[in-house]
Amino acid sequence: MNSKLWNIFLAASLTAVATGIGALPFLFIQRISRRWLSIFHAAAGGLMLAASHSLIREGTNINPGRAFSGILLGLGLIVIANRLIRRQGDMDVAELAGADARKALLILGVMTAHSFAEGVGVGVSYGDSDQLGIFVTAAIAIHNIPEGLAISLVLIPRGTPIWKSSGWSIFTSLPQPLMAIPAFLFVLAFEPFLPVGLGLAAGAMIWMVFAELIPDALEEATGPEVGIAVTVAFAALLAFQEYVLHL
Image 1 (cartoon, helix red, strand yellow):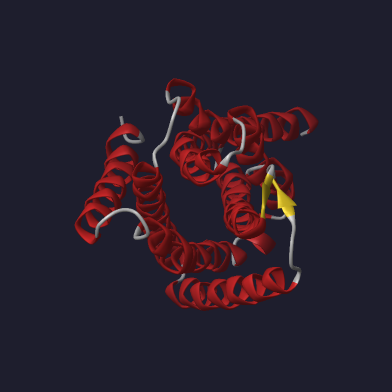
Image 2 (image 1 turned 90 degrees about the vertical axis):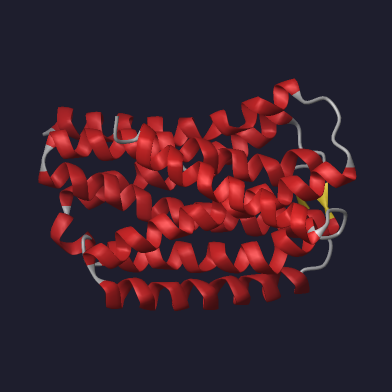
């Protein structure tokens, strides 16, 4: 049993590390104009909408009622968190300050909440069988790469160093190895929580897209440009999930 627990922890840790890979494309981008910054915000929004779509689909396949309640719970929590953060005044997050720091804290918080549900998913899947557990772990690891990219699209253009953005991306996925072991040991207790957690993360993400990322995108890019960036990013992540994860 101890050996299996270590294997599950290692597998879930690899899914967290995969999130940091999303920052690597910025090694080849030297300067970012304000217009491209807006387009990157739109692309991050498209990636997060696609991730939300997948979470809701997974949650409703397990229990539609719990998934829908999770969406509303996620919306309520992110609205409350945003108000609390605004009251704090000046802050410093990921080498960012002011409004940029608030946005960074929100997206990092949303992605971290998302990771709790994914960690439970890894543990629950290993409770079914090792084969299913390996498949789910691999799927989440690959899925985490574009999620890390979405985080980096918000942090790096605002001044966060690439290595720090990669580190923050990995940080948001640390709940995956932390939750995988308890979920495996108490699979029957954790399984009912899974659709609620998936819906919660999706609800928070959807709010983040429309309350923060899209308004920022429209500052320097036109509506049609933002629409194209959101749609292409949304389609790219869905295609990535459907065709890469099912090879």
